[in-house]
Length: 286
Image 1 (cartoon, rainbow, N blue to C red):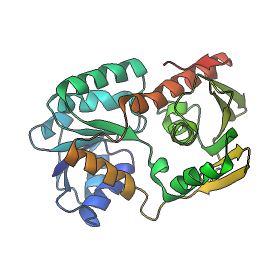
Image 2 (image 1 turned 120 degrees about the vertical axis):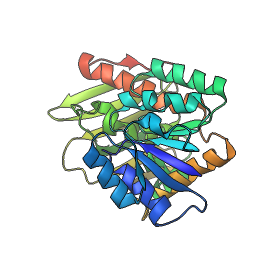
Image 3 (image 1 turned 90 degrees about the vertical axis):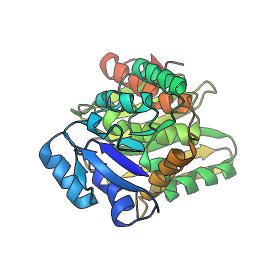
Image 4 (image 1 turned 90 degrees about the horizontal axis):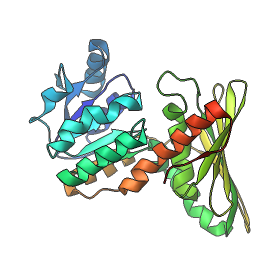
């Protein structure tokens, strides 16, 4: 299986290629092509990930790869980059966030379904063993009455504001507490902020968005039978589990997440982005 990666500014490109090409964790698969936003980005990723071919345009990979991954830093570029591949029947993994606007995401997913091409997207954090242990232990807490997460996030990031790193905490919250968020609100205090995700059941999940000084991610859950608070530690090989999930989809054609699950984090992030400006509770599109 020949894989092409679009985007090299992000460190994920070299890391993913390292798992596949250098560590050879997945037999029969190789990252053979890469396109970078600059020559320097492409050359660095190719060197570290042992990717043999750098292309001048993403489209230059068409007809040469069996699957494609998109790893550009700003979500507004993601779907435009992989659209021609998916339309041509080439399966695609889109790194987080899936896209920058939910309406574009809907159109893309409609096209993918019509083409019969499998696509998916996810945050690496929800694949960590520590996150999976946390989610499993939540079952011992009984009915969950409150939840929280913490992690780094810059609301003024040049790569999409709350979208850039807020996606990780949104993904953690949705995977752990449910996808049926009805509304969201941001409360700012200087350069930091909290976000409240409001559920129909009355559950509130609070995300702590810390611009500087936050060492990583963590979360807590309060249930009728107890409390669980844990840091979400990175795996020794942070990308291996996620890459394994993606390659399984490439081989089987079975999508690991529904299209609704792929799109929901973007809808939540759009509501949070609106709340950053309005300071009010904003509805999450359904």
